[in-house]
Image (tube, rainbow, N blue to C red; front, side, top):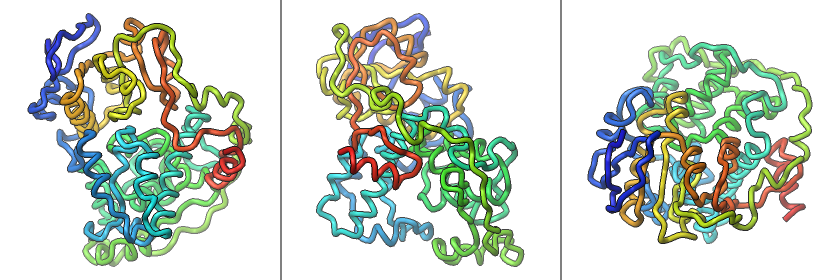
Length: 418
């Protein structure tokens, strides 16, 4: 079924029998689009985040970036006015802003704040490289055994510290890293629910939700990456959200008044892929563009939606296609806020390029049409076949074949190899 016959900038898009075309007219409310075209493909209440999608919004956020005091304030939770977090992660996750863009933007900032901020960017790069190498193995306990599969809800909403944070997750689709750790620890370390279910619930909501960062964050918090679970307690709440506990209905009976007992987690079976990459070329993707035939479209993926996308930049004259993966959306049930962020991003791009948006199967589109696409370091990229052109991924640091069992070991091998 065809939902629209023109792109936002005009033209005559190819209409596919197995796809719906999505209208992304610049002035059209994204909630109208979601309600009209995405029935059954999202979860939760219909809404948009206060964080706008798109290159224009991303550029403005980067221009206004001020990380003065970041080292001390990055983990502050409440009041919101005291937070030092940059809130750039949704743009970084989708390479609307590349890690290199942001890394360079703070190069003249005083050392203490610059070092801490750039360390966080390197952590994001580590997560991407770990996932690129390990693939779906990152859904398993990485190095130590922890509760993974037990179902149930691990967030006690009677606790104000949990309820406030989960409410922010559900209404804005973004959290400071400190509260992500609170929720992960509460889910598995305190409530003893399987971390795989908890990370999936968080993933559905986060605008910056990536398998790489979310899986890694949960694994490190619950202890499967380090052997030492993060012990969430009232102490962190009092420090990072002063005054919040006094408003809680459980103030006289706080279930996290004390730190949880220290736990020694047993090792998992060793995984050689953590120590050495058996296929470094597959992990990092092409180093130079690969040309198989002439492209007629630029295909954007969820991992590269910015104006600096290498395939997009290489073909300024070609129409741009984005295909919402209908089977994946039906399974994942992402929040409407995530879908709205993508639609806003595509609307913004349509002001500069001929953008055609479909709901269907991106792998089928790439099979049936000669597309230029930028490599993405995720397992699903291997589903693309018959690609006309493939462009290198914009790594902050080129992947190496050494140890990735921890951030420090990855960074040490990075120094040796680059």
